[in-house]
Amino acid sequence: MRTLYRKFITATLLILGISILIAFILANVVYMNSTRGKIDQQNVAIAQEVASSLEQMHSTTHLSFEAYLDSVSKLGYQIYVLSENGEEFDFGEPFSKKNLPVEALNVIEEKEVYHGMDHSPSPWLMMSHFSNQLDNTVGVPFTIGDQDFGLYLRPNNKMLFSDVHVIFAWFFVAVSIVSVSGVIWFAKHLIKPITKLTEATREITRENFTFPLNIRRKDEIGQLAESFSIMQTQLQHNDEARKSFINNVSHDFQSPLMNIQGYAELLKTQQLDDEHREYVEIIDQESKRLSNLTKQLLLLTSLDQKSYPMKLSVIRVDSQIKDTVRRHQWRLEEKEIEISYHLPPAPILADPELLMTVWDNLLTNAIKYNQADGSIFIQLTQNDGWVTITFSDTGIGMNAEQASKAFERFYRVDAARKKDGTGLGLSIVKHIIELHNGTIEVESEIQKGTTFTIKLPIEKQTEE
Image 1: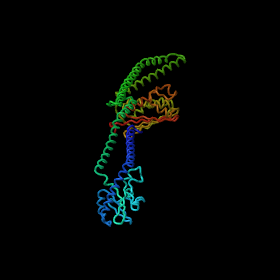
Image 2: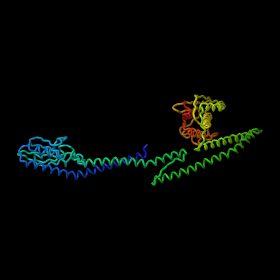
Image 3: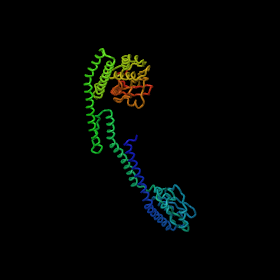
Image 4: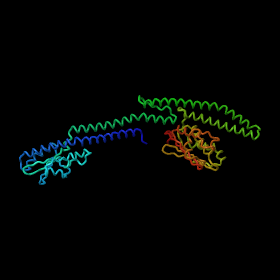
């Protein structure tokens, strides 16, 4: 995923690169169309002055000009002399390539000035003007005695870069490093509050409305953070009001529901015809289902409280699950479901009452939604400080979309599962597991069964 930070850095570096490219192109245009010609003329003037000095020596041999040209080369020039007889003389830094074009030979034959520096083969690339090649020189003719020579000259690249150029080069490097570092720092400074807002948004999805932002800015991001804090406060107030309402209503429901159940049980003992007995059975079942729903709502709202008083103690997970199986043995026999398990001793630090609720919900679902003559397998393993418990059944199963919503509150898959369910059991299970810093996952396939996998951490107090 491309983050805003990476996009900002990439965009800045791209703009910097494009700016350098445009500046380089403009520098090429200015240099090749204006500066290059002036430099060529200056070098031609210098070469002609040197040639004039050589001709004024009144010498008839080339030995007299070697010392002079050697001293000129030490002033920062590369010099090549070619006689009409083909003799070659080099002074100063040697050229990397000595391939003179036909135009350069006209210096000797036609007494023409050669403008090699002003006619480079790459007219749009100024770096070619600094190439260390013999064809990238200026050439002028001179005569000593009765012999004609060609003098080819260009400034020595190594001498071109003075201390001032070095200072400017390091200045450019320093500015580039500071600029890029400043952009990176500014990007981090700009993205940091956005990252915090993203984290706070994720915490809101987990019903944590007290995530601290600590963003003190007076720009648009600061205004966004202030609005977000106001929203957090309002959401927290609404959430507390909702939980308080559910808690109070659930409590208020319990008393009349108990009365309805009591009178329903009393009516069932009376002599009633079949039709009225059926009505009483419906009243009894629905009142029990509503009572169970209010109890689960009470538990869920209690778990939602951040200060829920967990009563931690060292418990045996294997013993708890075996006790749960024994309590539901009559239901297993009634539906003719075969149950098997592999439960080695597994002590962990946890809230025993809450974990019993987990095992009870999972086993109840495995029985309720299993098929006739089906089976249930429970397995417990320990590895790397974690206890892993799996509940597998051969029930009616769920598809991928249904399984992804299994832990949502009040979610029930289909009509076959709604007659006596509340849609809160798995939500409570997930909440309890998360309170213990554990995880729960579900895998299911239609008509093949469902597997719940729970991972709980083993605290150091219970490790041996």
